[in-house]
Amino acid sequence: MEPQTPRVLICESLAPAALAVFAARGVAADYEPELGRDRAALAERVGAYDGLIVRSATRVTAKLLDAAKRLKVVGRAGMSVDNIELGAATARGVIVMNTPFGNSITTAEHAIALLFALARRIPAADASTRAGNFEKNRFLGVEITGKTLGLIGCGAVGSIVADRALGLRMRVVAHDPFLSPERALDLGVEKVELDELLARSDFISLHTPVTPHTRNILSGDKLARTKPGVMIVNSCRAALIDEEALRALLDSGHVAGAAIDLAEKEQPADAALRGHPGVVITPHLGASTKEAQENVALQIAEQISDYLTRDAITNAVNFPSITAEEAGKLKPYIALVDRLGSFAGQLIDANIAKVSITYEGAVADLKIKALSASMVAALLRPLLATVNVVSAPTVARDLGVVMDEVTRAAQSDFESLVTLSVEAGGERLSVSGTVFNDGRPRIVSVNDIKVDAAIGPSMIYVTNEDRPGFIGRFASLLGNAGVNIATFALGRDREGGSSIALVEVDGETPENVLAAVRKLPGVRQAKALRF
Image (cartoon, rainbow, N blue to C red; front, top):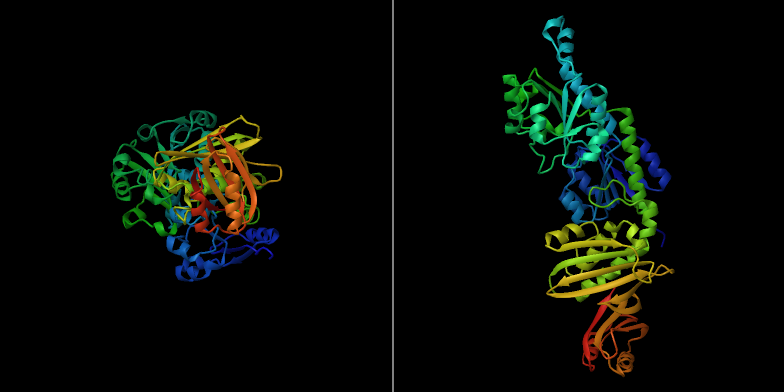
């Protein structure tokens, strides 16, 4: 059967360049720019698509995702993803991508423009002059040269604002927990704590997403600690600032001015703030340039096309990024870790306390986060059928599972070796595997007992005491029951010690046959496994 052509729904306005990318990549794209505003209509349509592209107006909720049974990826043409329920998308295995760099320059330039608008009172002066007045003395501004700009957030956009401000001979301080001292030095900014930034800054510009840690980051208490006469630029989200406190400080003159680039649904709750003479408001113009619109359209179309046709993941906010080249290299190891995780998951009956994964040799140089996510998903699936490769790390953390990853140079005869160790119910189970030149995954060790087992769809796993005659009795029992053996792999720790058998069989093994195997002398465990 020929593979199905991927389908993408674009439910908000997007530059035409995106459609050309999809057509060139063999992806069917439907352009419905007004559909995102009609939740009911979108819910009716979305179920037929593999990909969905939104901007800021469309709410991608758990309810919408429930209707999107076929959906694999949501693309946000822009940076902020606060209109997408990431937890719900992750739980359903839906990749969420954004375009964090496509409009970074445009957004940074708008922040600088707002800074100038405040410093020189340009909007009010323009309105007054258009009204027939000539009030030159009324609109006394301030220079920005030599002033201190405080950046709350110094990532993709904030770093560009810093560069532009330094070019304007401003001093720049930044508060960002993710900004390393080395990066701050490279940018030419001084990294400070928030309270110091508030006390020192003549201008403050916000460049951080809304998270539980940043919501209301400029609260009434924080705003009161700012330098008298400060001017504030917010080209991110209204939820970062306490509007009522801001208005009060504008009225008192403590805050000399504020510029806000608002999303459509973020109109100030307080009409007095919207009409305040010290406030400049723009209608979410941060990304509104021809160049930015073209950039984000091209980027999101390329990213989604690459994912749907080549398994490449770029700028995902809920999964590691993987290039198309990396995806090709990962493919056989994804199959391997899936089998290792499934093997362990089917043998464990107690709550999992700890998972340790060791990558040795060449595999350690690959994107191990993606491999670990696949392995943990397979490990948990016998217990939680709905877990998937995207949600697995979050689900494991919520279950209280301690995760440990180790990478190291090859220490065995194998070019690459992956070992999964699971602690559950006071017991430890470990399984190691590799990929041979034929690309097929193989199990090479179970609980430190060496074995060489191909992994088929239906297997029988047996642990027993190493006794003469066991193999013959075991094989005869299966043959007499009509169970055909495809491959047979054995291993033991020492003569007369513990032994294991991994047997690939055709079809499922009846439970009564497994019960008979368990009654064989020396057998400790016999279990049917499905892969």
